[in-house]
Length: 329
Image 1 (cartoon, rainbow, N blue to C red):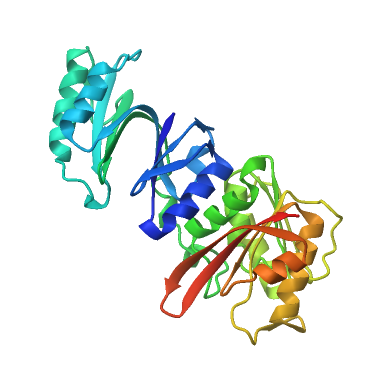
Image 2: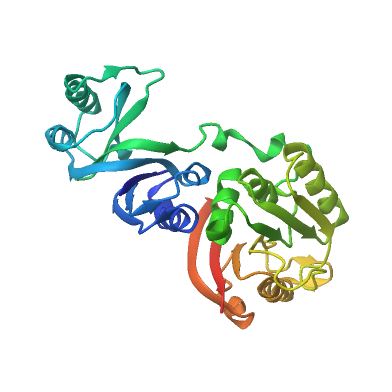
């Protein structure tokens, strides 16, 4: 069993759980605010998750108090040696517990068992995570890159306003292509500046994109060449409703539809554009994530998709993203 510590806010947790299950874990069950357990874990894939901050091999679960955590550790069989650091966390301050006391008392148990304490570069890290009335104790096995969220779209060689944040792009890619990663081909038929394609390449997938505007296709290629000089990627100019690609060319399609009901791209009204793109997506891949400023379930079903989930994510006062997780019917 494993402990998963989610990033983001409470409203992000359903999507975080599904992202983890699709891309790295099995049997994911949310057990407390910001916390879940998993029956299995692809440890090598866990650091590529967007909304899972850390994963630990679970030692035990108890009530959210220091004494309970100490009892779990004292009862555990430990086949590790070397140095250790103990980290305690009170998720969103939902538990009535002292993390300093937890670190001190758990550290004393490990010292009694022959471990040395090294807070800077330990051989092992023990985590005690408290949330609400639950405490999960485990050995950390994976951690998301601390610099991941600091990359900004404005840092790219080619930038346009409205570009998606990397953390969201990464999550949508994992939702769509997770089971096939890292040996996946991911296609974005409305690639814009290439943010989704960039995240696909960074987690090992082959990126394939198209855009109706030459400016965007060239800009996306510039960004991918800058960040992924040795990766597999291709970008072309193309109409999302009539793609110049063979059936089944990709493992997953991910795209961010234009916002605003009056949007017109390449001569298409928005409804015709999104509906046509969904139909072409079903031809080229078995899985899709559509991001839009409203619900498109009916159009997705008409195009041959089963809607497995839809999440609403508020970006700012005037924009809520609707994330549709689709599987070809």
